[in-house]
Image (tube, rainbow, N blue to C red; front, top):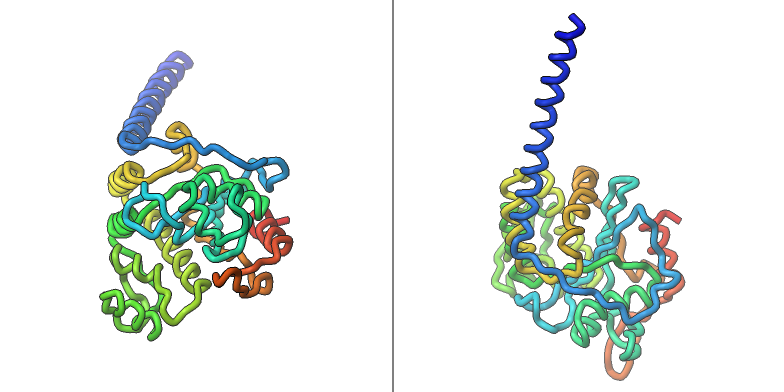
Length: 304
């Protein structure tokens, strides 16, 4: 009887080993398939990283949307959202940095945050946020309009809770005719125009829409089938500009997956009550209280 039990145990161990090898092989194939066209760029910091907020439990990736279709173009950043992946609590946090904030761009002096990307690209945008708001950024992903449309359409669109009269009128100016209402389904182009609305509303409302749509994308990704996700990931990664090394993509994905079912929490910088309008050399800017905003970031992302 003892020999028979050992025989059965050996068979079971062999089966488990074969299954493990098959799983590893499938994972390797999927990783190779997704990253085949992906090439990262080197992020070279111009500023001193000493003293920046950071913990091993949180990975900060800056998502940069530029105001053109070409992700490789040198132009202003239309949106800057810091995606914070908290592996300790399995949560995702989205922090918008307003493009019109009056900040010190390393090497150029004080100007709007959006100009940093036009001056020297995403690397300078990363340095500018790090040096002004004292938070470490672990990498960036830059996308243009085409990739955003591809991402939304690849997930069969997103459904926003509501489009009001002002938003409907603003969309109509861009040729997107959507009646006001609740639970409105948007395709890639409609979602792009929804995120870019400026007419009749403030930039704070615009960035709130961007975070809203990004949250919906994460939610749709959670329920999408694996083959759809693999195909979409390959298409997107082959066209973005990113500083995340290829060898780190799998680990980053493994950090994000457990967080997808928990929704997202959101914050804007500058935070309420920490900014005021100013005109500098004929340019309208958002002047900010840096100390208050640094503390807001610390509390929101790290909890202290």
